[in-house]
Image (cartoon, rainbow, N blue to C red; front, side, top):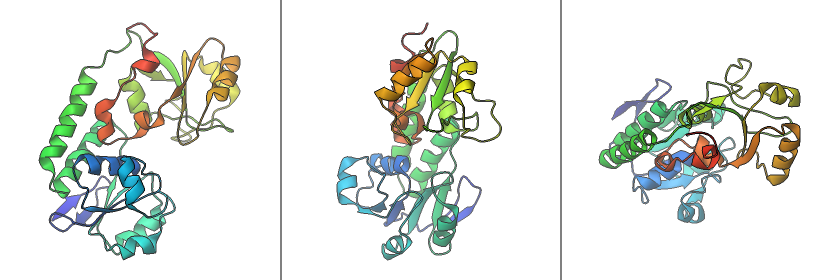
Length: 261
């Protein structure tokens, strides 16, 4: 069977693949929700959901430090990868040997398109359609603030790093009724921001993500001293950055509830 991935590459995949390797945590969770327990033979050390898979499936390294020979030994007939989360050189090595379908997800529409296509490739079209419908219903039902909340979302500490408009996290902030104060930055999709830049951005809400850097309450306390007028909270990084079936549980209310709805 022939499919086009989200990099516009043509990928030839066996009909109904039986040996799948996932190199992306959110797509691993999707495969579980599609009911592919038997077919998935390898996952990364960051694929923590579902827990049973994390404890029982063969781990093939980290998302950017894949154990290529271990993957080859599994003889996969499908590898699911992601442009941003995986290393290009490693992907090229795998693409020369195995069918590799690569996602590139920057919007909610990209995410649902990925889910639909993965469902087609794995012969789980009905299950994928049900997941997509649940996601669309979830976002349609969100109660949003009457005025977008000026928000700074930080993914890294020392130096601080945020996100610009060309990221999936940005699209999730928009869907939450938040205005990303660093959206206009053009120097990087994940720009470094100084303390002064944070102050000058005048955020009403500062979200410190749980991943990739594990911010904690001590970081929140320091941020409250830096920007005393802002509400500072730890954010569930998986909720804002995982673009698979978890989106059906997307709930920004813990972060936006104190603002006018």
